[in-house]
Length: 157
Image (cartoon, rainbow, N blue to C red; front, side, top):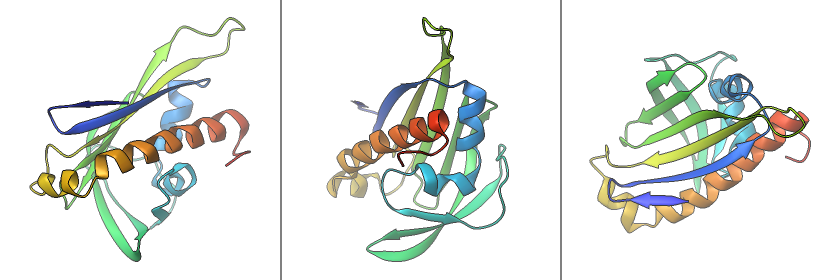
């Protein structure tokens, strides 16, 4: 886990899958509830699809009470980077870095998830209520769930 003065926090994990396999899961909003480790994402609104730069999508959420969050893809490089933002201004970003294959020839990718509140007009609130620590824990769980789904087709989730 890393945190810097730009008001962001990141968690990374090496996963035995290709960037393409992982990006396919991350860029489909209907998969977000499957890999979410925070326990807040319920379901995406709409059909499965691959997001692109500028696309919007909505998810049904629950943090104490149910609500719907509308997001917009604000960064996109196919199979490498995707990030979205919502009305609060903070961003969720995934970076996929291909690594050398393992000794047995299996693919390996470093996935870094970042929660960035530097772009939020309510950034002070994010820090005051302790979301960086809470979100870091959720991101670690998300990457573990992504790993489990990508490497064993959902077993262990």
